[in-house]
Length: 125
Length: 138
Image 1 (cartoon, each protein chain N blue to C red):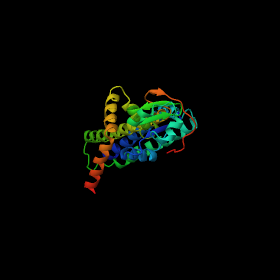
Image 2 (cartoon, rainbow over the protein chains, first blue to last red; image 1 turned 60 degrees about the horizontal axis):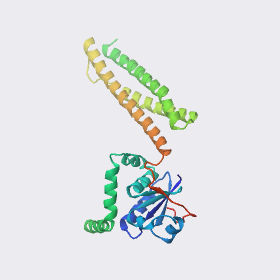
Image 3 (cartoon, chains in turn brown, yellow; image 1 turned 135 degrees about the vertical axis):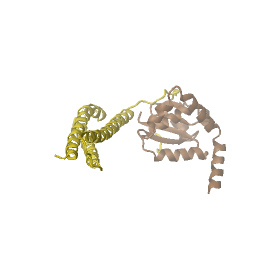
Image 4 (cartoon, rainbow over the protein chains, first blue to last red; image 1 turned 90 degrees about the horizontal axis):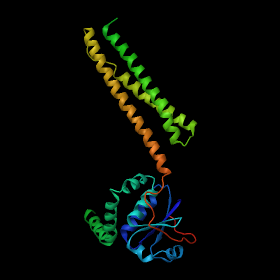
């Protein structure tokens, strides 16, 4: 696999921050970012269930392999030079359920978390 | 000859011999690791191996040299042997520490190279059809 496409929500501040962080990391595998449910996403992945991609981050390989939620996060880590080891650590049977819970909690509350983040930044600034 | 000078000479002889022994062990056995790390590129492996061993010699002989001075007089052979034993013990500990540090470097390099070729950690949830090319690469 040489390239991974990340379907992300450009309306969510947390996702944009993660997007910006991912862009700047050294990589083993190229990462492309496509806004979720966009015309481009529908064009490139005509058979994908795009309502599911709205709920959680989705990563798709150049071979058409689809990864949802926690697996999608692990694939993002796997693409990065400095975090590939972590993707293996977190994918172990002991840690994957926890990773899944944390990721689903973050993605379901991403708009709330964004608000909290802004509040904290305002307080510290 | 003065007891202290004899102890110093013995200290130098033993420490240098120990350093050479450990460095040679590292040189001989580290090569296999490095050839694997560099995917069979033997000349690169030999070069890195040599550089690591030079660093190993410099650090150890530097320590041996700095730690030579005893700082007090020894009156008897017994005291000289005790002082020598203490000094050699320190040299051995430093050598051991350096040796493990080198092993750590070897294993880290090896892990890095195996990570580079590693397959994804998880199996995909499904496969979908991919059409055309995306435009906004990051």
